[in-house]
Length: 173
Image 1 (spheres, one colour):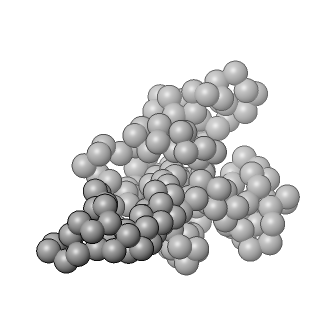
Image 2: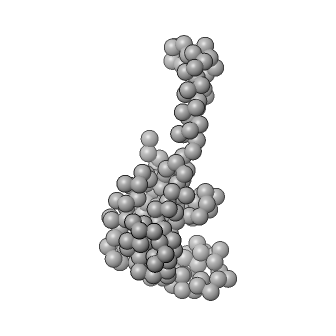
Image 3: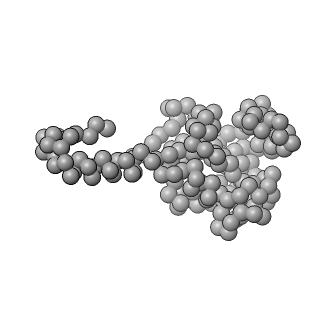
């Protein structure tokens, strides 16, 4: 969006320098801080029929869903997605779990989405998660912890592109 200089017009109306400053300040604070994150409602969430409850909690926390689908990962696809963990001792178990049933990947949008979402879902181990978080409420164990959340904006972008094409992402205006 091009912001006119003071005295220039927007749709024929003259703008004061104060208006231009306030408008640009609004854009800087509200439009440019919008961030996206990826989440996956894992097979245990789907199996326990908690999709609606978890989505309700996500939306009530101010996140907007801009992409969502229900899929079943193959062992190969789950392995590709979690390739960053290939050398970790839990990799095989994680891949087997993520390919054990349907899951629901979503791209979410909100100011400070990554940080706020990680706070909303809680610690990986539900026993250590804060009260009221998704994992404290619904997860059974560290291995079956209901939900995935990106750990950085950069990884959110990479992970989102893994599951969704640009045409599948629909911003909410």
